[in-house]
Length: 576
Image 1 (cartoon, one colour):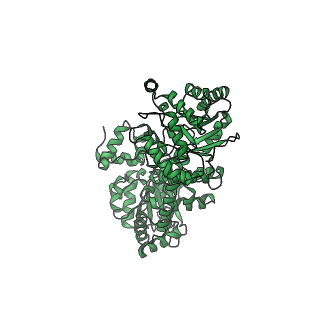
Image 2 (cartoon, rainbow, N blue to C red):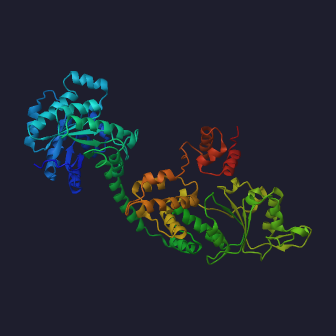
Image 3 (cartoon, rainbow, N blue to C red):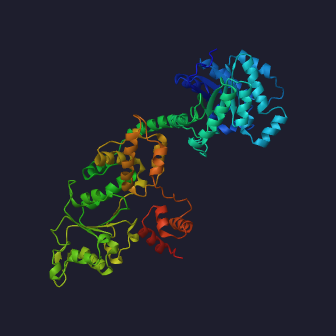
């Protein structure tokens, strides 16, 4: 039976619940193993805290898996979790049974230290309290085995030190982190104060006793390293940090890799492949269903002659769309761009479009054929109503007149109106302009509707704009879950901002370390997801109520522009 090191080296113990974890811990060079009912429950997918509930007999559960799975699979010393709550307890006989079974020693687990102060007093009066746990471990030590005492307070630590137990492990509480971990209540710096005080007490009473830590805010090796700079300890015991959290990450990552490999085998049908090939020269990437439907519509409009209403939410890039509408080979077409939102006076747009009879403003009208392949008007809803009606007549007739002239002038080949609305009726255009564009609108699918293309967009954007590749292998599975569940209200602009910050994280991380969930969450500005409460009208009404009818906050929560929200409020009659 191998004994735990006594040469003063830093000890690493692994509190486990299965034979497979025992073998893995041995390969990781753990110094000893601890077989606990909490570990077994973790392996069943149950939070560790369930070890204190009457769901299984702790003694039967622990002895069975430790004897059948752990001892045969490892050469490491194994300490067994024992409790003092049995109906007939003989501490000496219990210690001798551990020796016969081949265990290296014992720990007091499950322990009444996890109960309230009042409950501990009740158990103590019944002879089943902390004092009896210390007596059991002293008996284990007396037969030549190793005893480790879990404690939570200074008083409990003193009891163990007074009888000279081999090891005292200060339990800092149930572990934070992972899918089932508790929320962090204390920082590393805060717990270091208690660690320093209790450690000094133990060493003053029993210098040979080894002082270890487990649980609490220690989630990673870096956390332990930070604590060691603040308080000296002799070792660390990992439960969830060695068994549950690594399993959550590694299994999730491995399954995700295989899923990703399977997705790479997906083959587009002939029509889908032709659409992807057609869109590539213009800069389009992806093969999500919504994206392919969009490309099919865009291809049809690009080969026709007529003005187009392009609907693109904030943050969506429109240059590729304009290339497709204005050229046949992916080149940037010659464009006259008018951003009505950026004009000091929207009325100026009229003279830019149709010309002016003012000699000081004399210029060639933007709508005149030959000026450019495209006339692009951003925020067309801000044009004066009269200008919108005049533009509608020009689109319908194919000619227009400059102020003060009756000579008809042929229209430019194509006018593209770019709006951030989600549909033509919500674009806020004059009815005459809406009517002439009927059947000539196209909506760019927002990122939330084409999540299958997210990684392709991330990879392309990181290469084009930063000169470095950020691909699937850079993300852990839980990080990918965050990315795919995010609503992306800022669309491609939001991806660009995120990538700039992720490059800094990757540059500072150790080689091979993936981007984690905890890295990404602080970088995303997630709007509230729309609750499934019925129709769009119901969702908007619910969001308005929850945000005190503040339109700015409501629009952000719903992932839409203020203008779109305003139009929908008017449409559904939601004014107060």
